[in-house]
Image 1 (tube, one colour):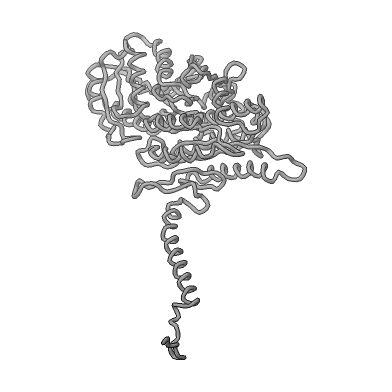
Image 2: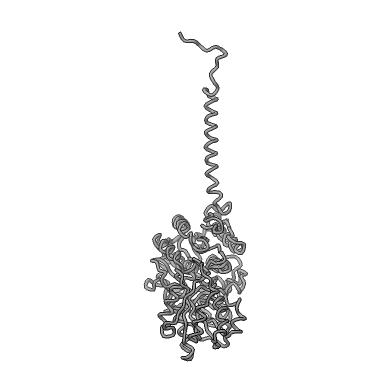
Length: 515
């Protein structure tokens, strides 16, 4: 016979609705706790609140911020704070012209152009922070000229085809040695769709294997890429273009100049960096091809200390100096990174100890390598050493109007309007990054003018870059550049001025131009 529970035999609390509610609460707290434990892994990896697309990579001394910055500024380095804030502010202004144009005004369409480059540095990274800053200043100047930023004079804004679409400049940080290019390219590929697509990538850092890999992947994603200071002749991808001369062009420009020397001064010695670095390897190859009769078998290697895989000590140019003394060479062909050049000068300044009393000329091809000469200017003058650089730019003379490209004057006016100092032009990085972004904008605007489409896509822009010749050539700060589908991405008609340190007097001859 069933027995009913008496008044003192109540059901335990956890078996009723109260228990069920408590169980739900506990499970919710556990789930919330699990979520909270997992959540910080994403949050703590974010470089700053409001920048979810920028994350920390690496650990210890290798920890650095990589990813994509758009409308919320992140400085990456104290020296980049001002320029990154200005770029983010302009990106917000561009967005606002579309989202809230104001009473009586129509929406202004916009697209995105990314600047892929290192934003962080170390003592041995190929790009010092000064060159990164000037790169951003040059790219921002191109953006402002395209958008008609407030404060630009009318003369400064000329040269950009049309007025629409406007441009957001996306900063894509790939790490000090470009090691984190893959996740960043993945992020950029995700921006190529939608109402305001990414249409091109500019910059791409320096000529190293990681640049080649990134360019190939961008091509696979159908994204056109425009290198700013890439000169290595073995950098090649289906959709990779460059606004710089190649290392072969640098060598040919030097040959045009050095052939004027007396025969006895053409005895050259090749000093080359032996690392796996596209720039130094192809610079060496260019010297061998163009100056075979100058160099013959006279050559010696060193291991550079700046840039990728920095295991060298270039202060020990011991073999180079001894061999140059032995052969009495008066001409040194330098195939190395600019940041190692000053140590070669220091080493050559001791050559008197081994009986070499003749003047020496160091021939180099680079964008801005001669900037390293400032710290050894006294040694250059006291020891009769001259650096002769085939360069992508010559801002000091161009400011004075000497052989200045037609597009330099309006660029320079813009640069002044934006309150950047002339000294920021001396390394060439501002001019070259301006020209890379300008090329992307020029192609985009021509597509819009021809099709009437507000938002071209990556295929449209790629096709148009190959048509930027004849009447469509780009009036860049560094020359009136032409591109087609038969030049492996290199520009036609790019001037290659010669810079001498210490400076020579008189007016230089017209510069070599790329074929």
